[in-house]
Length: 150
Image (cartoon, rainbow, N blue to C red; front, side, top):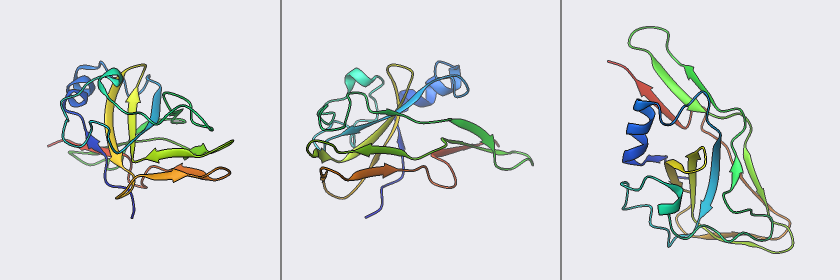
C-alpha cells in the first residue's frame, strides 16, 4: 500500500501562520515512528518530545531521523488566489546496515529542533527495513502540502 496523505498537527498550523515555523529558514527533518506511536488520534501534540515510540536508533537509523534536503515553498498558480506548495528536493533514504530497522509505521516531519508539523502512515502494517535494504520517502509531485488563499 502507498503511504497515506500527510496529516497536520493542529499546533503546526498556528506556528506556520505566526512565523514560529519559518518555511524559508528552518531545517526540516523526517523521523520514523512505530505503530504504537501516539500519532493517529492525537493531532493536538506540538513538540517532538510529546511523541512516543520513535524507531530505535540502530542499524543505520539515527535518533531524530534525517534532514529533508532543500526544502522549498513555491507558488503553483500565479493567478488569484494562488496556491503554494511545500516540498523538499531529494528523497530521504534510510539504509539498514548491520541489522534491520524494525517496526516502521509512520514518518513525521518536524522543523528546527522540536516543532512537529505532520505525519504519514507509511503502510497498513508496521514493517522492517531489512539489513542491506533501503526505505525511500519522496515528496509527492504536488508537494507535501499546499495552501490556498481565497
